[in-house]
Image: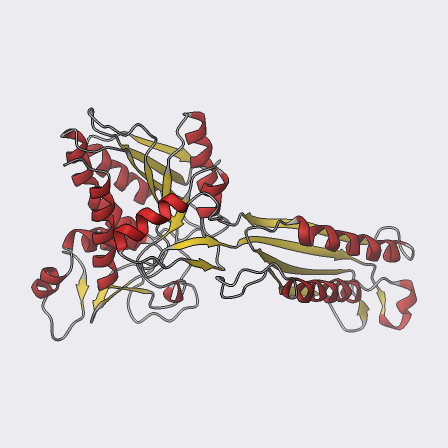
Length: 411
């Protein structure tokens, strides 16, 4: 193995006797690819493609517009004598990771490092650990398929640019639709400490640009203060957030049981003695699965129109723009009861969780594919310096995927 081992007490041999070396080998290999979202992921994708093709599998790639990034979709087909006719089970993961800029790491973020019972490296938790376990499972799945024992297809879907708006997964889903493939189930391997997450909130991010009119600050009547009007709209967003929190249709399984609105950034003005002609702010909306963007967008647009009318009464060239920058749908549990029962039976844990962060799971459920989230590591470690996954979590994930494969196998 090529993992750097910083343990003082345990030898590498002892580690390999406790933890599955194949999954750790793959995790080390994946971490070494710098797939920060602003960079290409093609080197990683091509490495996995070569591996899959050596196993005799056919790989399908979908690219971004500039051909600098790719999704990968590969299928281990059901055996010839399969008694279940369906479109199979998807194991889904994203290949991109968040930047390390400005973070103080104690080791190289793109070189896996074992310290104690943890493996450190960017993406170790979010979410190359799951991908490593899935890749380790493929040779066994191929053998079962060749022997006629795999009763349902097993798919692996790897996407790009999840961290910047879940941009890659829709291309995979569009390709599957064009090919007439609608998988029966999907498991997204985001870090959940291997707990079953059955739903998550959606997220929409908006940028608001308030265009005013400059004037000398001693002549305020000749200008239209963009910051002042932006502050009124920010205040309205905050009021709307309070209204959302007071609704009686919340969901207690979420840590925050209601939909939320939050202003995140604001900038404007050039000098104190100049009436500002531009102010921009951003806000995000995290909606419960049964709510939509229109629940907040329509009232905010109405308020913006009211303020714009006031501004244009003083200067017709002024106004307010509202631009949507990110839209990721919520993941629902409406159609996943059968999948939930399967996962509970395999894990022996019947607990269901719901989370506030968004994943590609919402895009799969929107495509009519029942989905749950379950993967190694804790979301609390994601995106931080010295990101890590506990080695026991990789072992747990391997055991879970083995049981999943067994459930698809005829004896």
